[in-house]
Length: 114
Image (tube, rainbow, N blue to C red; front, side, top):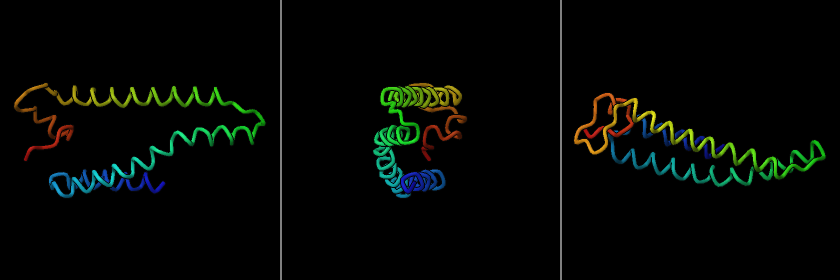
């Protein structure tokens, strides 16, 4: 939980002080460290779910639990990547353009160059 709270703090710093380079670096560093601690615990938690399920039901469902977890991870990763593409399309992103559309900059998909 501490990792998730620190991630939220890091995101907040970047969101509210994103125009200041020092604050942006500090916010990204906090977010990165917090993400590493939280992400490092996700895979071992699958084993905890298996153990808990066995204790509650008396049945050990290793393969089913791992299959569902892997499927969820793949779907979530795919949707996350698609969301980035959809946001860029919504903001009228043009690859290799010298200047991007104002809508794109105001959506903060790309940092404002000011």
